[in-house]
Length: 494
Image (cartoon, rainbow, N blue to C red):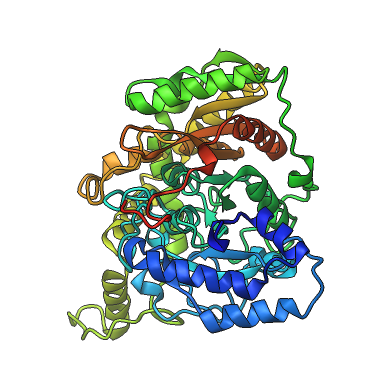
């Protein structure tokens, strides 16, 4: 097996036995990037000299840290000191943060090698990684299809064998949906479990950083490294994180799995529904029980999300004006009415933000404007409470909830760009978890007739990530979907 195909746990074992070194692994991954990235475009920044210097530095130290020598790719929304961090937007052109995000500090302390920045939808506004100022990322399983979004680059590079682990962010499904479409494992932790310090904010009450990997043990390992209390993040919860990977078990006998009727309604593709029914049969064969549940306010989730999230985005993105950092327009003032300063603001934001970013800023600004705040934003917060209440009631009847991750497999590049509503509905099965703050994971559970991956979503009570990992691990041990790799990664046409 090639070094680029090894999981993090396999690399750790190889390091222990002296079978390879971090430098050799990084060089093998560079070869994979050179071969594949001109096709899929998962990376937007890769400093090879810095990566090799880090690998050689680690080789001078004893092998003792949990991620020693393991390369981890970083979504371009997380601040890394001295490296471009642009959120795939022209308006942050040239911005290099003078500090690290907290999760980056945790990775470095654990011995990880930061392996470049990955492509994404601009400011995480999207479900297809097509709104990036760098151009779209393509799905390694079929290069005419999208990889999902907004963490499409982070999922595509893991799926394609360019790196064993990556970090993404999930505001409405932005880790789980691309994980489903790229055939990898992606976790959205409980809100407050992982520090958001150094994550460039989209919607502050919804955003969460999470791990992406090829299997459950790797995902659990990365999750336990980044999940700690951080006093620099006011929303970070001071609760102990279990050693997820060490506590993995595949015995799920007696667990009750809730199956929400609303998540198998009209709009779920037949191939997706069929794969989920097969997954439920597998889980029942492992000793779990299933019970039908209802999440009645699910039908309001998309509408609710697209009031709350754009409203918070409008507020968060007001800081990008061309004054202190990032892109500044050089366009001459277009009117004598405002004066040169106001014209600079207007031109910078007009030229710096892409179409989807402008759409969401305008939606959010309208929802927060005088005369509409109570009618839209405050009412949306009340509906959000009802959605959270649905989950509270459901978990009285079951231990965790099983659903599809995405209603369809990966759709064609450009297919939904002109239809924002259709694009927004891509996240209909993941949004509720963000509105409720609960943890959720996506893992592979099948393929459609075109060979495109299908994802299984597992949801649990707040801070019960261990249960999610255990159910996912039991399913993984009973199936082989997680072992499949795109033909592109193996040197075949995709």
